[in-house]
Image (tube, rainbow, N blue to C red; front, top):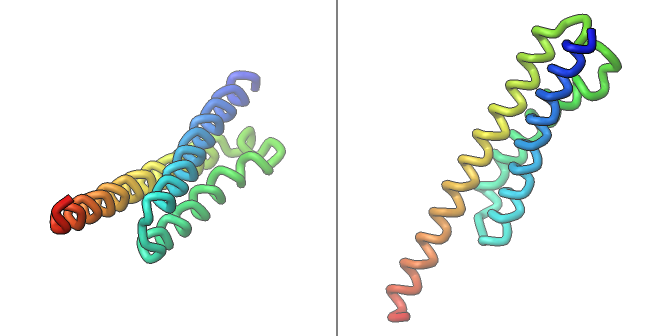
Length: 108
């Protein structure tokens, strides 16, 4: 029982790491001036990743009764977070590329 609990808790911490990175990258994208239309799909991914993580943090032992479902759900949370981070990184790079092109066109 202790081993199962430790395994699920370890996965939850990893999911939290990726959720936090996603939120940090979202703030970076906003600060970089990424358009809201590019941020909206990431908001949806955040909601989905959060739900997959939250179900197991609020379950009061459900992972003990269904460890495979817990593992699958927590892994989905991490995967969705990582997809969102990649989307944000691409949007930031595109925004920075546009800004550089505009500066070059202006002669600066």
